[in-house]
Image 1: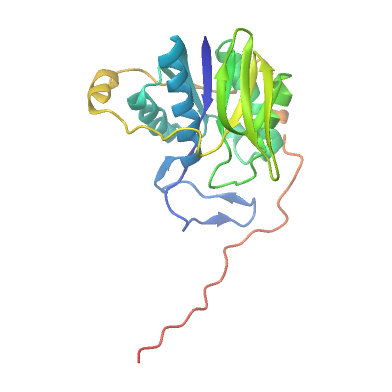
Image 2: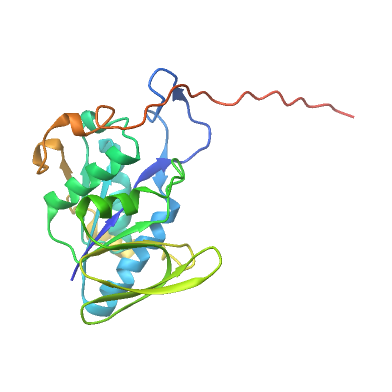
Length: 240
């Protein structure tokens, strides 16, 4: 069984600058971390690996410095990792980001299961995972808090607003998971030593099945930011 986990490097601080012309976060020089919600997706993949001997591949779209979160995933138990890095991918909205990830996934192999965290802390849309599935033409389920494998797919328990729903989804499929599905493990020092020389594959748009750069980044985005700016802080402190 081959599993792909979508991960992302997000700013490790809430104090980030925004390019007011493009509406894009200025990530250069900002320390990053693995998106907390993706830890639950990765832990789910690793539990399935332990249960049925699956291979776990992780991938992230971002600058080359995003290699750090792939290496963190290695230390937790992932087998292979990719960074999809190309300036032409920058500034993408949900539509362009999900299309990029679908093309990236297609370029690296065939997967029975794709796992995503519910959302990212820098975007908070919770739309990218389901949109990736739509681009790939595969079934998906969101807000999954429990799942179990069977012969031809999996049963997923979704926590909806007013009800809990269990659905059967055949492979290949995509799942976005909630925080309460599993407690993520800590990176292992022993594993860190074993994987310190494991390569991280850096791929650009040229390896995608669709190489038309107009479908990616700002050019491929259906929405444009009219204006974005950081909030003004006018709090005053008085000493008594």
